[in-house]
Length: 350
Image (cartoon, rainbow, N blue to C red):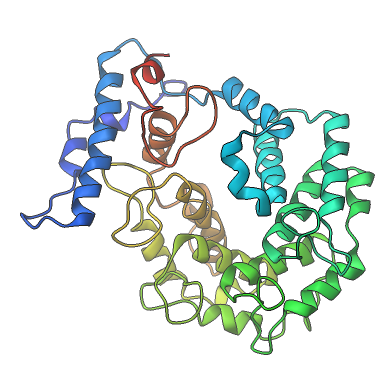
C-alpha cells in the first residue's frame, strides 16, 4: 500500500536461516564471520524489542554536525591520513552535498585555498602541501573543487599542467601509475579518466590502449582485479567499470559475468556487501558494489535489456538499507564499516 513502509527484513522469521553454516569445519574466516553475524543479531534483537519504533532512518543532523566539525578540526587519530588530506575535503564535501546541506562561502573559499597549496608546480595534486603529485589526491581535489563549483574553485585547477601530469604517469600499455615511479593498478586509470573528463582535457590519444588494459583486468570470476591476473575486488571493479563508462567502452566488458559476480557479493544475513569472495561484510562496499550496479544496469539497458534494468537494481535494496541504518551509524555521527561498541542499545532506541 502506498505510504506504508515495507516490514523490516530482520523481522522476517526466515532471516536467521541465512546465518553462516560452517559444516563442522572451523577456520579463522568462519570464526570471524560468526562474530560479525552475532554482533548484527544483537543489534537486531534489541531493535525487535522496541515494537513502537518507526522504520530506521538516517541520522541526518548528527552526520551533518560530524561533517561540519571535520572541515575545521580533526582529532589526532587522523594523523595517519596526512598524505590524504584532499580526500578528507572531498569525503566531507561530497557527504554534505548528498545531505543537501549548504557549504558556507567562507568555508568553501578556505578549502579552495588549501587545495591550491596541495597543487604541485608540475601539475596534479599531492596528499598535502609540499608532497609529490599523486593521482588519488588529484582525483579527490578536482572532485572537491567541482563540488564547490565557484569561479575561485575552478580557477585553482591548472588544466595545462594537469594534462602534463597525466601524460607523465601514462604507461605504454595504456595503464597509469599512481605517481611518477609508483605502482600501477586500475584505480589510476579511473582517477585519470575522471579528472580528465571533469576538466575537459580528455583526448583519445591520452587514453590510447587504456580500454584494453582495463578489460584485461576482468578475470574468470566476472569482477575486475587491480592488475591483470589477480583476484576480483569490489573497489577495483567499480574503478575499472566507471573508467570504461567515462571512456564510452563499458559494453566491451562481459556484463553478464560482472552482474553475476557483484550480486553474489551481497551477504545473505548481514544485507551489506563484501569486497571479495570469502571476506567479511564492510560498509564501504555499500558504495563500491552497490554503486557499480547503476552503471552496470545502464550498460545492459544500452545493450537492449528490458525496461526493468532502469527501474530496479538487481540486489536486495532494503537489506542494504537496514544494514547501513541499523548497524553502521554512529549515534554521534559518521558511519562504521560494521557493528562495534559504538552501536549500542542507546543507538537502536534513540
